[in-house]
Length: 272
Image (cartoon, rainbow, N blue to C red; front, side, top):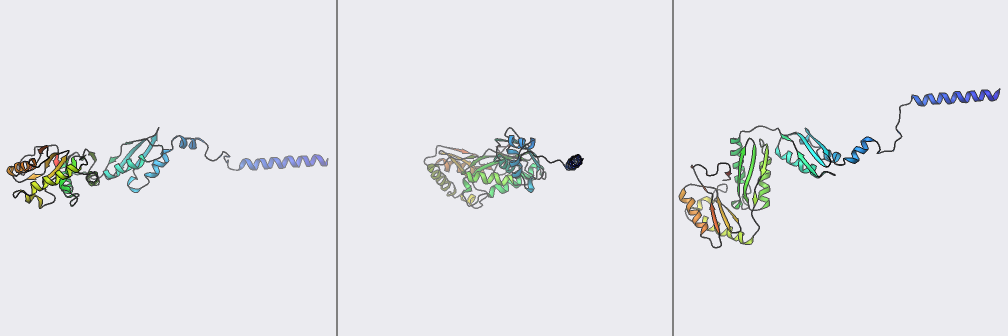
């Protein structure tokens, strides 16, 4: 009898304990890092890293997805600079091998004519004091898209022009086609000799007064190109003759524009 009562109490206690356990919240006993979410993270290691790299105020409207190593950026930013920087940052994320940049630049809309005037002024004074006379960078604007071309003496000059345009409000996209002149001691000597020949001539030395409006001299392997705006056809012809008379110059292309005359190059606006 006593044994039967003990057995019944044990059974009742066990049933009560089982009921209490069933009433508790369900807790997963799976090992940390397992499950579908962890597997997805393992299969796509770049997603979290890419998102973390865009955790900045300027990217608040940007989204990133990574599939098979290809990151796709969508959303909008205020400046083209942010669009370009987002792509560079995500390209460094773990597991990302390529970036498809679909970000829109949603900043203020500026008429092409206004962008042309403002950017022309800023580019003209860019790198003043660093030999910008030897930069012949050109640009054009169409529907907010700026195409940069022409020649830069160094990579630093090229990067400076690209950065200046990228940070200007109203620029929707930037196409960089600037060529960097070859590194050459001979070309450096030719640049200086052509500059002396051109600016040392009495009727041309006034173009050295305003650093934003020089006769620009670009040299590639002994071949000289002249850019800028001069006051008369006579000045244009004289500059050509002076440059062509320098020893070691193989050829001279004269792209100088004469003030108040139609530009010979309609798509490209030479930095003046």
